[in-house]
Amino acid sequence: MSFIDNSSLIVDAVLTKVGRERLSENDFTIEKFALGDDEVDYSLYNEANTAGPNNFGIVIENMPIHQAFTVNDLALQYKLVTQQIGQNTTPELGESVPSNITVTGEGDTIVINPSTIGGLDDEEYIFELVNDLDVVMTSGDVDALGES
Image (cartoon, rainbow, N blue to C red):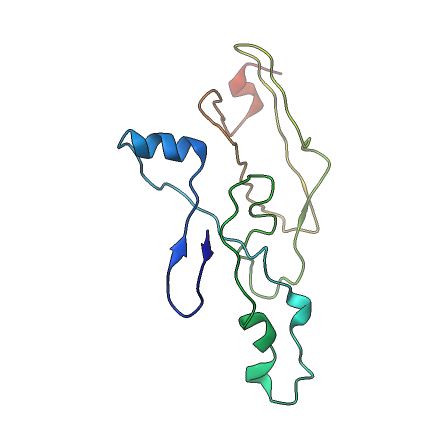
């Protein structure tokens, strides 16, 4: 999603393949969305601008905004997130979660036990699937899955 023209509030939203299919079937409801600012170069924020604080980000504000990406690998590399007040670092996911997970057959299960480096004691995790039509995710105790 991106703002095409910063002089008005026109929003360009790109639907996923599944979203386009559901829209064509008249079965489309936006359940969740994500925001990002991949096209912004924050190194251009200039606190030395002699025109004053209102102009520190003038270069960023006047940058052209690109149209929304249509390729998953390029879109939302830097998602906007909400952090607690005073938290100045972004927690990193530890090595406890593999970058790719493959299950090969019906009934196959995998247990994911995430951990965070530099985060808070009580973290919340969001797992995103490109296509969740063939996957059931369950949170909770491992014993509930029949494993020991």
